Amino acid sequence: MTLIAFLRCIDGCVLISDRQASEWSGHSQEEKKTFVSEEKDFAIAGAGSGFDVVSIFSVLTHDVTVVGSNVVARLRQAIQDYCERSGPYSNPDVRVEALLIARQTEGLVPYEVRIHGSQFYINLISTIYRCCGIDAARIIAGYFLKKKKLDELPWEEATQYAIATMKEVGKEVNGVGRLEEFGFDITVMLENGAVYESENYRQDSADLQHSFRILSNFSSEFTRTHSPTEES
Image (cartoon, rainbow, N blue to C red):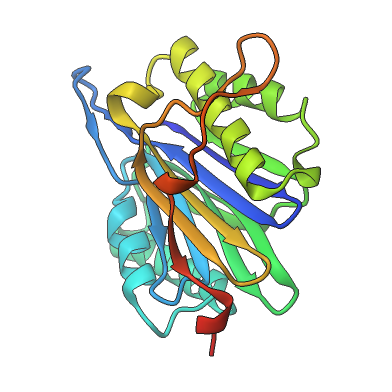
């Protein structure tokens, strides 16, 4: 597993994941875990074992008929189809967790996705942050995230706090990729329609050692991949 975090800031939502993929042999490699739709109206990040996450998430995000308003229904159907193809007794060792942000009529809506064996659910997230992945990583990340009023921060500062949190967890938990070794994937979706992305982010921009400190300006590391004026 891994560590993926969603958080809501004053002007939108942030989705951040590490990039370390670990095998049973102990070998680790970089792996893409975050996928953004062609229309830039939903983003999903997930990881796990015994289930081809990429084959479903990648296909959904490249299908232009799947948009923020119907992604939950289409994702539910895709997972159901996958489980049925695997037979009535799906691998009980399957364990996948994911976080989804979708732009819908009421604004940006976050969801938690869990797949255990042939059982799965997609539920709304009502809190200002949610983590999934290794248990120890979730606990440590949650400790730091709950200390900050994230929904009162602009996206730049909230994202730096998320980066600092991921850094700290990477130091403490085996299986969570460190910033300097594997980098992080970060997607920011704003309520005004703008989307910012940084794949394989490696800049040391913030620190949690004593009190939260911004170490450097990081805005240049993000690519604005969608603007409000581009919406149809």
